[in-house]
Image 1 (tube, helix red, strand yellow):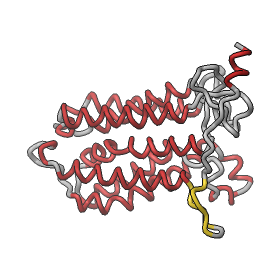
Image 2 (cartoon, one colour):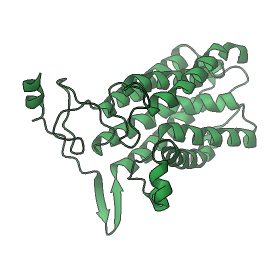
Image 3 (cartoon, one colour):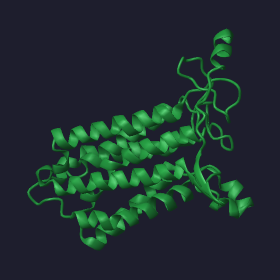
Image 4 (cartoon, one colour):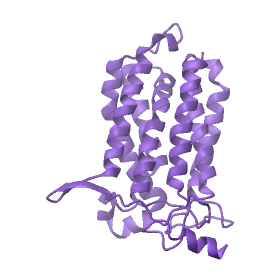
Length: 277
C-alpha cells in the first residue's frame, strides 16, 4: 500500500493555468468561462424544449422562447448571487464576518451549488408569477438544462485544483498542487460525470422517450433526486472543507446535510407528478 501510494504520487496534475489570459489587471479565468458557457448552452437547450410542442401536453408549455430569453438574466443573477451567498452562509460565515471584503473574493471558496439552486428557485418563482407561467413547467425546463452548467463548473473546479478528494491509491488518482504530495480522488471529475453527463442523459431520456414534460414536476423531481444522490455518494470520497470538517461521525459532511432535504423534495415531486398532468 505504501509503495503504491509513493509510486502514484509521481503522477503529474495537468499543467493548466486557471487564468486563460489577462489584459492588465483584468483576468479571464476558466472558472468564469465555465459559468458563461454553461448558462449559454443551457439557454439554447431550454429554447429547443419550449419550442418542441410534441413534448408537452395539449395545453402546451405555456411559455415561449422569448420568455426563456428574458429569463436568462434572471437565472444568471439567481445563480451568481445565490451561489456566493450560499457559500458564505453554509461554509465561510466566520471568515466573512471577520473580514466582510472577503464576500466579494469569489476566488476564496467560490460558489455553493445549493445556494445557487435556492437563488435560481427564487428567480423562477418571481418570473413565473410575473409571466403567468405554471411554475412547475418552468421548473422542469430549467432543471432539464442545469446538468450542462454542472458539467462545465466541475471541470473548472478540477482545473483550479479545488474541491479534491481524500487520499487514495486508485490508479486514476491525481496529485493536486494544493492538496499535498500524495494522490487523491479527483472528485470534481466524479461529480462532472454523475451530476453532469449522467444526469443530463437520464433527464433527456425521460423527456424524449418517456414524455416526462407532460407530467408537471417529473423532470424537476428527477433532477433534484438525481443530484442529491450523486452529491451524497461523492461526498464519501471528497475531502470536507477545512474550515468545517466533518459534522459528525467522521463521515457526515455539510454537502450531505444540504442534499438530504433535496432528496426528500425530489422524491415528493416525482411521486406527485402524475396528479399534476
